[in-house]
Length: 135
Image (cartoon, rainbow, N blue to C red; front, side, top):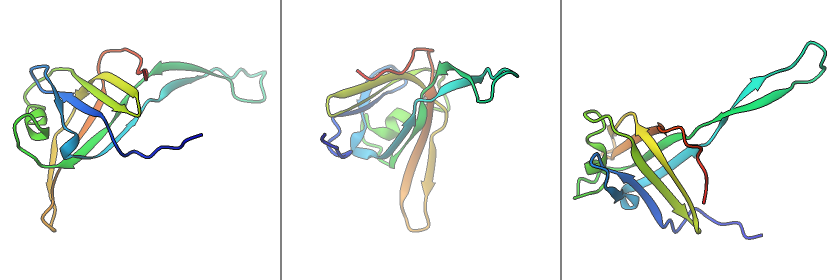
């Protein structure tokens, strides 16, 4: 077994509002996502333990990083979140494993901390009903 670190990402790209994938690894500091499944409780009165069915799959999370308004970088990708209503392809690849999903970006929050840091965060959610699958 070879446990791996989160270092050496090969891909973190998000489409800009025109549908062009942009590599934003250099200004992304943190990325978290989850791929939960809904659960329906089907426990009958005759049972002494829970019984459940798995339901729909989902994908959501938040990307965060430092403000960088260079051409085709994070600010250029996210500045249109409030003015466009388009699904965007988000691609994640590390260690030969790839996860690509169509997502909706729901906010582009900018924070200027008292210490002077200028950071962004962007929450995202699955857009198209396709089950998130690693390849």
